[in-house]
Image (cartoon, rainbow, N blue to C red; front, side, top):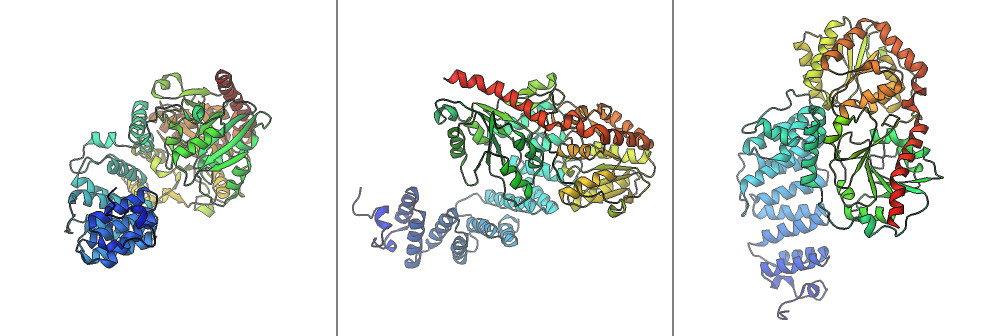
Length: 616
């Protein structure tokens, strides 16, 4: 060591040599050493001392670095001050403006954050990139703007910013991914709308798995979307599996089932699984949650937690540490309830913290996640010709693959007048999320309305743009706007109760109803579905098979449309389906939840116990 220069450790002490005696290079080296030693506060203090005692024009670099250190410490208010001081010296310091925007976003001042990024991203803004590529900085700012606008549900603005970004550079896979999905959310058809030099191939190959599930019934495309995500985002772990590195040397006693999810709260997954956790046979299995779910304060969240033998909260815990905790807990079967949906943590599974890892419910499709070898299914959702497109092997149940909850609260039945539904009209209904709506199916719905005089279509409108686009599309088909009736979002008990006002639910394709199909059948309202080639396009068909109404499963859009018209023109037929569900629906195999849980436990025990024996 050169003893003529102070060490980072010396500088962290109160009697350290004044930092202002260093030049900028020495300062940055010393601060970096402090950060590497886990002393970011000392590094920040070093920068602050140097800035206050130095008149060098390089002060802006020290201020920028100070902001970066403070930001990493989540000291966003102090970081804001540092970046603003740097900008006071050099207003066109683009990197500082970019980072300032991040601090403002973290501080909840989102309009100010957008303005900071706009000052970098707009074409009439000229700045000094201080050695960086000005186009890259501009694209970075536009990506930030689009992301935040989408989060704030300002979809049209977000899409406009994405288009601006894609006009500057076409080969931005992440931007293309969000561009496709935001058009789905707004019912902007066709969804694949090229921009500038963007090609249809780029749009297709950049489509996220979630978006692809709603756009294509081709299982090969769904598999490729999953594999692309895994290739780009999931850790490539090749070492000894964590369940062998950190798990117990000997596994015995009850089967330990772990449930991995960020959706064990007021979410579709939480709403379906609450009774599953409660009904596990504690004489032979234990249920353990490993979750990063939001603490939403709902009775459902409290009920789910009570249904577990233990709950390990993974908020703020990195994926590797989380996987180690699961392995150390001696989990025999880890059931991933999230797949590749929003907020998923597939890296945990990639470390293989359990001997048996299973995909279930959250993503009704293949995940392609390394380490996930099984998927819970039935023979309707996963027929033999679908298996080549799945990286997981099926655990086939005789029950419907989808669990449900018989304890859900239902409000009193409302009147049709409460929701502006005509008393004497045939009410078609679809309460699926609007991103599941596709141009061919919506056009089919309009033709159905055209053939069933006086009928109405009762929908949810997720946002103002999809509502406007749907009404415009209806007008093109000659359907009066008053025949599309939009329902507001309501609490779950009222949401369930109002299904009773509909005559027939029309399913979406290729992204079928899942929880929504279970809900309407539980409430005694029939659903007409179109079953295709993929798991997700066969979900409602599985529910109808197990509830005893296979007559409501169709296998082409033409058949779907014809069947809907036949039922709409013959309301007595819809009434007979309702009578059947009223008399037999809740006693059907679909809602035999105790039987489902027993069968699931049997299957998991058959898988896991031989592995215990083999490990001894």
